[in-house]
Length: 305
Ligand code: 13P
Ligand code: SF4
Image 1 (cartoon, protein in one colour):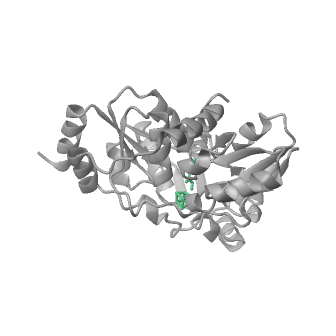
Image 2 (tube, rainbow, N blue to C red):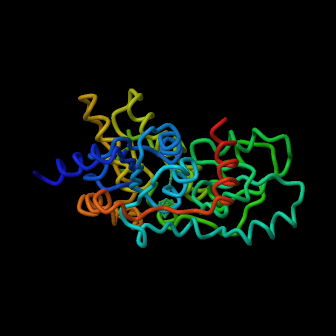
């Protein structure tokens, strides 16, 4: 039996589902039951009736799956290296301090944070719904973090005062995009539409044809009449879109804005680690009841929108 068959057999025996983020390596995307952006994976984690959720992504995503399914076993095939640095930019103590400074503000926290921070939020958001979540509140002031660039994206789509916390919170992968990159692709591919993730700097967002989440990019490319796209996010996003295009028997030209826009935290998961994870039921995500209860309220507030 080859490794793919062994993984599928284990998956059936253990009544497990494999969820994979759009930035996962090709081999993982291809064996996953569901591939998606942060929001799509939150919904999949909420809706599953399987006993075990194997989350192929980064730590905060697996934590979200656990918050939404405390009674289930949530596993991640690698625990140490799947570390999103941006999720560490906004620890709970910073939120508490900022809440004191802005007592009238509602707190909207990007899902790219650890569960202990989500537990202090009024609502979470993803890049697919950040503006909708912010606009769903009556309050005029919103504490928003940790991604300052997503905060910029939201501030252009609301009349509320967006207070960014912490100053300088960012994703190092999207930070690599420069105006020179945009000028280069515009010159080399004049017919291509430029799609940019809102974690990119404001000047990059302003030069894009569309600013959208990774899930938004998939839908846009699949449904568009256009044939060429520059993909301004992590490089394996192209792998993801190609998988869906292939299923539809279509081909389109997809150009990475930067070939070295690689999220190293998304790459340590391999087929070998996935098989070991199912076999040994390791590494399990565990969170305190209090964190689960409070983080769930904030995530559910988002899922209701
Ligand atoms: P999406 O919600 O668009 O998938 O983004 C998640 C992420 O980590 C982007 O860096
Ligand atoms: Fe974190 Fe950036 Fe990687 Fe997304 S791309 S998981 S924000 S480091």
